Image (tube, rainbow, N blue to C red; front, side, top):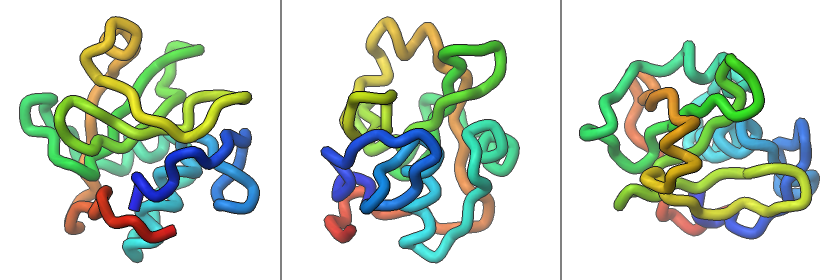
Length: 127
């Protein structure tokens, strides 16, 4: 499901294919397609999820970062093999990144798993 959103434009506050996505809009959209409702902001999604050690990551887990502030302000979806998908910033599109890249290691806060739910099939190719 997440991979089907590759190439969709970034849009601050966006949470749909037609408007584009910001980071938490993308995660909310993907989970909503699996009938799971997430809080809307990256910070609230962090609070909502159960912590997962980096060594125990599974596809569909959410990854959280502090990029522009001292608070969590970015979220991505882990897809496996140290790779995640996210809506990066204005002027860019939904894309892949590597968790072990220096930039992402520096800003990484932690990972979370949605409590009591099955993991989202990130490879499913439906929009």
